[in-house]
Amino acid sequence: MKTSTTATLNEADYQTQIRQVITTLQADLPTLFERDISYAIYTQDIAFSDPISAFKGKLNYRIIFWTLRFHARLFFESIYFDVHSIQQTEKEIIQVHWTVRGKLRLPWQANLLFNGDSTYRLNGEGLIYDHCDRWDRKPTEILKQFLPARSREN
Image 1 (cartoon, helix red, strand yellow):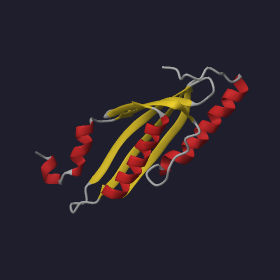
Image 2 (image 1 turned 135 degrees about the vertical axis):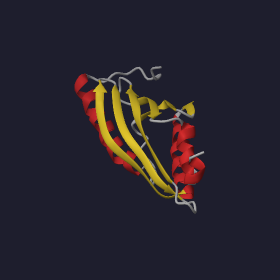
Image 3 (image 1 turned 135 degrees about the horizontal axis):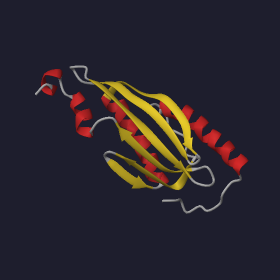
């Protein structure tokens, strides 16, 4: 699933680029529900997948982040993306562990909480060509958090 780009950086430049990617993720991820992220660290043909969707292409990647911000403002009084760790686990892999938590705009003040991790795969230029999210529970279990407490017990 390598990107179509074939250029490869030397080791020193590659590690410099990896540090830049990590710095960008550290700056972008905690505020992804509030403001747009930087897309310079991703390839044009970035692939994304999570438990409910999968697609390819930077335009689609931009759309998913716009959609997250739009729905966060529409449905939540407050919502946070808490980053617990960002680390390079292998030469071409960056792993991020996080929690999403928020309070829905509902009369019963429902809270949303789930944990997950993101695996970012990098090409020879140190750009992210694949982003895969995993969640600690099924999407239906996450959506049940939107219901009043009485309804969740049934």
